[in-house]
Image (cartoon, rainbow, N blue to C red):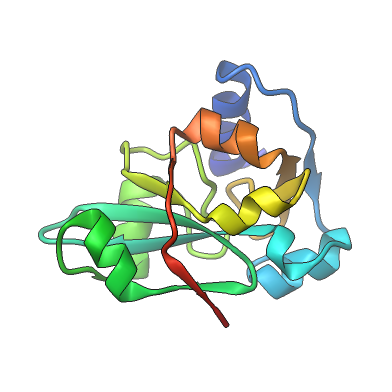
Length: 157
């Protein structure tokens, strides 16, 4: 088991959430790939989108797969100018590579916002630390274990 996958499993266990992590036969690096791999609609996939603020601070936006972060809305929530975080900084701060960033188990605590569109589903699927591992969870449980603030920050792609 990779360190990233183990960190996600440990975070889920510590939060008292019993879910099964699924290894996908093909890549689940993108929301489209993940939806195809587990046989759900695109909006049931939780994208972990990271933006960099001033300095090296990162901000995480948990977004429904068919939605896109509206940068102006995201900046209003963060209270500062945001830029897309680069891959090296994402790995350094979260411990995950882009394409496998989980919503929890980060090396550093991050401010997290959650897309209200995710609550349209009984179950959503999120990355489990690698581009080949995902887990299903209720949106309410995901919000609870991540302490994400639910706020409108998206636009339809």
